[in-house]
Amino acid sequence: MKQGSTLFLKVVLVFIALSATAVCSYIFYDAMGRPAEVRNTPFLLVLLAVVPFIFALLQAFKLLNYIDRNVAFSNLSVIALKDIKYAAIAMSVIFYAELPVIFQIADEDDAPGLILFWTAFASTPIVVAVFAAVLQKLLQHGMDLKSENDLTV
Amino acid sequence: MKKGSTLFLKVVILLIAAGALVWLAVFPQLEGRAANLDLIGIYRDPLIIYTYIGSITFFAGLYQAFKLLVYIENNKTFSMPSVNAIRNIKYCAISFGTFILLGIAYIRLTAVEDDPAGVIALGIITTFASIVVAATAAVFQKLLQNAVDMKSENDLTV
Image 1 (tube, each protein chain N blue to C red):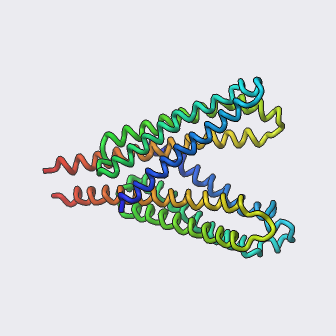
Image 2: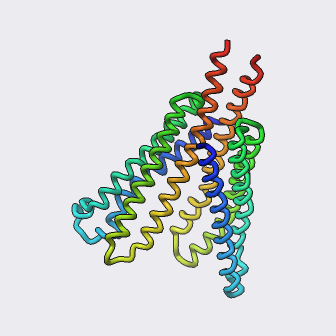
Image 3: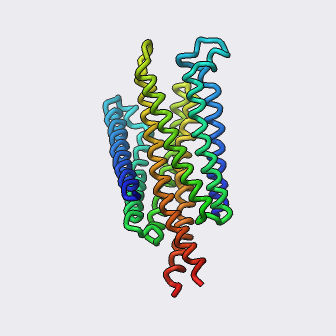
């Protein structure tokens, strides 16, 4: 039964990766079709955040593979979680770096809620990073348990 | 450091719960099918009451997650209570998703005036998200069960 759950989650990961690519391509394509001053704003730098996002999805896929093969409590999955944590932090850094640009846009369009929304949006990867850190500590514990188990004659 | 991480996650859970409560209490007045009724009429609408009952599963899931974080803090991660907590999160997610699904089916079948496409899309996405949560909880439950078995094997080995 675990095989079914992990397979489902893997399919979901692939689906999320495809949607993220679709959204980014749409934003990029749409921005390219507009006049020069819109095209060159640093706003498009947020699209850089897709790179750590896809990387984190890859690591999650690897982690699901480890769980499938029953090597969940091992160094490999600890490393995978560490990568997910760093990728999430990188995403958050990129989003927070966009904040000054969002300030400008919110000023021009007179939409103060945009700043609040963007701050909340930029904080979501941090929650994921903390979650991954807790999981990493847990797996570390589990690893110690397992080695204690295996080494007991 | 783990204490800081679990405290942060607990605060996040509380924030989500507070935000959800505020949203539930305020949204019926803003827009939707009951926006033009008087104060009592808004909250008597059967669909609103149905949503409130469904939100109980949501808050129950958040509560179980909070309890799980407390167990992790007290170093009782690999124990039966936390396996039970994750199992409860799984069941809460499944029932929450079912609630939303049934509500969406009802809206789909009985909507006449407005075009319910937006609500239906939102409902499908929410159902999908809760199914993903349920699947993740199931995977972690299996993992924790493995670890609990390992631990009891450990503890019982003389």
